Length: 69
Image (cartoon, rainbow, N blue to C red; front, side, top):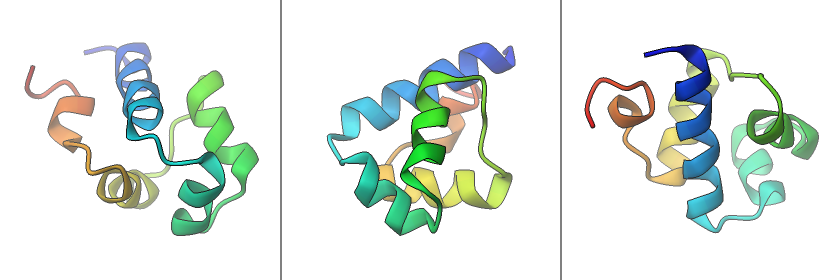
């Protein structure tokens, strides 16, 4: 799977969570602008942040990474 597809799945998970970006940012210890970049730009979180993000969103990291459909 290409990085752009992984980023699309990540953006989808953030949107579908219904959790405000401010709350996601607080839980991750990053700025709200950083979370916005995950959704709108070709920015992907560091692996430790990605793991936390999946937990906050209750998202399957294997799905986001394209390891399962």
